[in-house]
Length: 195
Image (cartoon, rainbow, N blue to C red; front, side, top):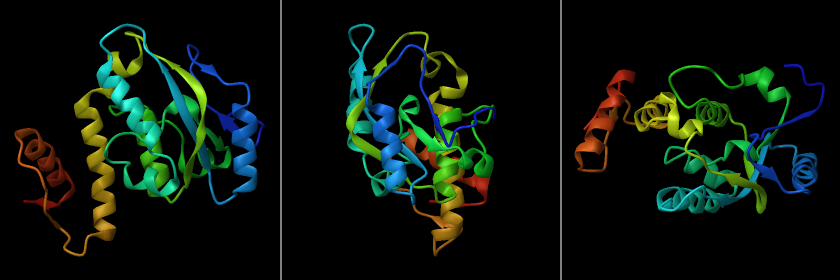
């Protein structure tokens, strides 16, 4: 990594950060050194009509605020909007950065960092106007498909279960739909026994 700074800020070219974003995020990390990453709320700017599904996601992700919520809800969906983050540079050297592969690289990195005990906080102020488009990677790249998300969620859920499930390798999966059962079977790839 070429940066010589203490912190790394992430942003996409088509988004717009609010003027006080970096000042507020740096101040948070300086005053709360037990945290490694700080994010914030997003203002969603849709590119067309009929974006209710994505609007619901933005409402959900903006509702996940403190470190405990971020950790507990990490397997529902990515609790962090990637272009809103600022992190301590040393974390990249310690735990690695974005990995190229067949999974959503930002979500995989947050799961990996959270798995290693990195605390993430979200400011309760909007830090970014998040512009949506038909060409964004989350809509066009195979590594951001639903299946890719379930695959990476399952990998990190399995790692968590190995350490925290007193009935290991047994796992009870709650949910009766065909989709739930299909996704639960992914746990068998990690020598877990879902039933």
